[in-house]
Length: 229
Image 1: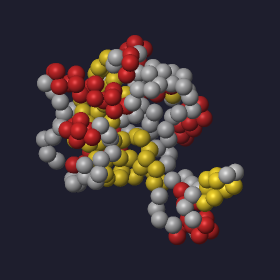
Image 2: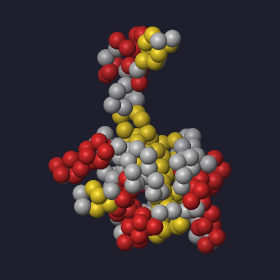
Image 3: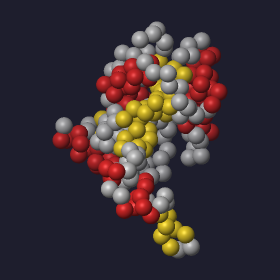
Image 4: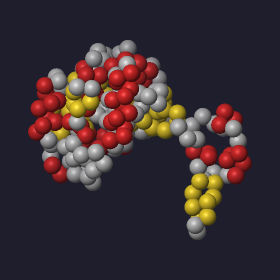
C-alpha cells in the first residue's frame, strides 16, 4: 500500500423528490446519512471524510457524527444539479486549502449497508490494480437478456429471442452498478468529469448490502435487514 491519500466525498443535498428529506430520515435509531459517515470514518485507508451539502440540518448531523462539511452553493443542490459538479466544487475548495487528495472515494449516503470493511477491501483492491477507477456492482436481479421493449405497441426482445428462452446459468454474468462506492484518481476525475473511467474495476457486493434507498419501500427493506442483524 503506497502513501497515496484517499478522501471520501459524500454528496448529501436536502431535497429529494422520491423520498423527501431522505438523508435525514431515521433508520435504526440514527439518520440515514450517519451510516455512510461512520463507514468512512471507520476505514483507516481514508484520511478525510467530507460531506457536501447546502442544508443546515444535514450539516449539523454530519458534524455531530464526525465528518467535515464543505458548504455547497444552492445552485449545485437543485434537482437538475449533477453529482460531478458537487464533487468538482469540493475539490476546488480543497485546492484552495492546498490539500487535494491523490484519489477520491465517492460515497452516496443512500447506501447505508455498505460498511467500513467494504471500503477497506475496495481501496486495497483498487490500489493493487492497474484500473483507472473502481465501481461497486451487484448481480442483476433480473437478467437484462430476458428484458423486452415495445415496438409500435408490440413486445420485442431487447436482445434476441434465443436469449429469452435460455436458462439464466447459461447466460453471461450480468451486473448493475450499485452506487455504493466509486474510487478514482483526482486528476482523472478532473479531466473526465466522470466516476467510471476505463479500465474500470468491478467491486462485487451482495444484493443485500447494495440496497439503494430511493423510496419508502427501500427504507423499510433496509430497516428489516438491520432488525434481522
